[in-house]
Image 1 (cartoon, rainbow, N blue to C red):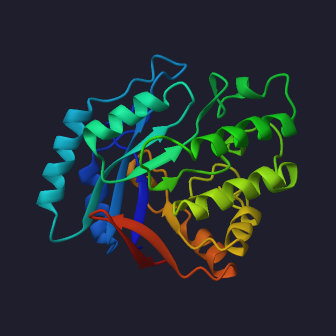
Image 2 (cartoon, rainbow, N blue to C red):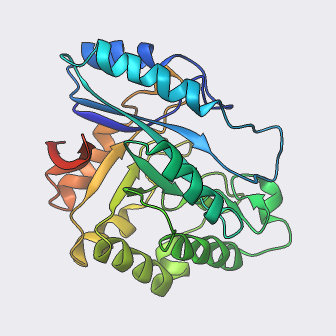
Length: 262
């Protein structure tokens, strides 16, 4: 194991465990780098999903970064949930806290998180795919700095039917991948599959298209919500990368892009 670039701890409302538990497990696995990315979903449709005290979070992470500086590289980052309504608030927040690492993700589309079944009521696979992917395409122009595009294909994660995004919306997918490449962003390979492992996020077809378009920057991200999730399903994703001739992942260490072996 070399790096995990998407981790949630007790500072996220849907996660558990302290960052130090992840760190000790990663050190035991000889990992080189961890990026903690607590949830920030401003104006989220469910008010019970509350953002943590970011002052406390960053103070805690700075303590751990100093404590383990000679043993592992750590980033104190955020996963920013993009919507058209919150983008300027996101900009203010990123400017204020200057996180080490930012994942730009789309969770909420048209006022509902597309993980939930409610999003799919009275719609079709094509319509659901188009709504989600157009939101992702818009998010790539977010008015704040970010490093990676999170879990491209999130809409498929809990969909009540099969959704092959590259077949349903090939042109939008191509636009998204081209923009990621031209913008120099990292495409996250999210290993938090809850369906059979052939349902990767992004899918095998999308990853292969990304590479064919000239994409080279990927990172491995377990999207862990508890310490036991660390590095989950990595071997499957390593095989996907081998098929696409990807030999390293791109991580952000001390503000700089660094290539680490898979």
